[in-house]
Image (tube, rainbow over all chains, first blue to last red; front, side):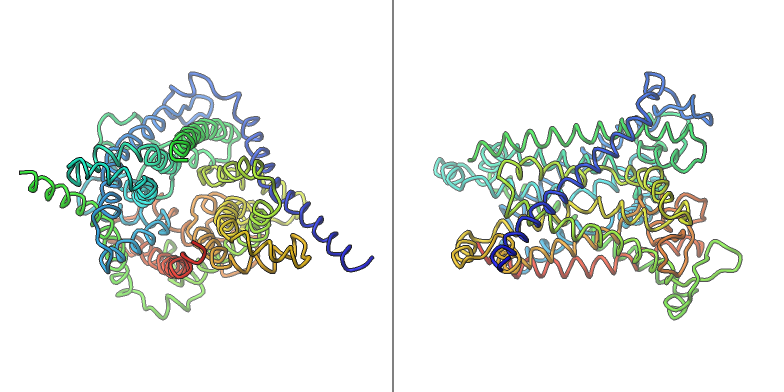
Length: 284
Length: 292
């Protein structure tokens, strides 16, 4: 074999290796999900969704945890969505290039990289202790809101940036003020991208466990929360609690709860991807 | 009137932007405040040199090294899985794969990063550990090996996605020139494209490391709760993050020294990720406009 042939061989070999690596990730994903389905699918019925937690595995349900997750989701959306979008609009449309905006930018990029458990420590000290909210749904939602704020800001800025400047100029030419232009033109034009970012960030919030454990969310709550000041559990914490128990029945419960959590997460991701594709077509 | 309204709106938006600054100040001051009180009772020297971490026992030791070694061990295993696989995927997708394949596979891989980490914890403890015990009979039920391996799978998309973006951004002409000289795709990829995209690749690796260090639920579920100064991947260990979870699950009095240990551990973790994030931000800013 001469050198050219050897090089072609290497090239082909790497190609096979590359396909292999790509498939490894996907195959493991399928294997894991398949195993979870086998472990848990038989456990899912109406009772599992509607029952309160119990010491007996076969009587336990996820009702309180599911309601807790829905509460967290709703409050986190209400808190993080307006603040995140407003901050992004400021950075993209108002902030003048300079030290101040550079500082804001570095800051947001750093926040995005702070481990989620650190946000838990912040929430524990500020919301639970200093503001005296206790281990409530509100304290948990505020903590998660701060956690997803950087994700919403980055996604919103990207979408605003993608709006062609011709739209802006046309609006100004008709005599619209800056805010009228933003509110009537730029936001509607970038709504698809913003929505994608918000949904993705919320799907992250639904799956978060560590910061809520630190804030003091419980593994066992007897009733679903009825207002934001009550104690709560969420689906991932319920799963964590069940995984940590030795009896096999709880492992089955954990697998069943994971199926429901993954269903929620994947659905949110699918909706986000759908909006992103729809929105990308608009400008291309 | 209109001017007033516009001004008011701008102030409101500015306030929202300033909240992000307040968050950073909040994190730093909360961690620093509690850590300072912690270090009034425990000497910094002991904190960094004592080889035992037993704040919850009667014989209390406050040496962070065992938690650091646990964090280092799981992260190192995770990176040694994610780096070769993630990088190979990014090179394959950017240089070899047909466009349609790339477009379908990339979002599917990104799904790996969307799965809640507690679910990965389940995989590690219930599926991977028993399987590995078939190969290594002396593997403990809790160990850093399976936690690290599963974490590696989780962070593959961090490396593959960002690196692929960087490789994809390298101008076509550079590749054409290399092919014109008779180079194969492989030679072009490693000698031309990868060096040209190196800053983006380095950023992806740093972000992956930072993510691995801060990862909590996988290690809390599967790696154990035994702070141990070791590099043996077969035995139970504890990471900084898992320790914080362990204390949070228990009934620790606010204001006690046990309560403050989680902030001392937290500020150590924060310091590491802060340095990594800052480096990656610098690199990104410096090379952002290279090919635009």
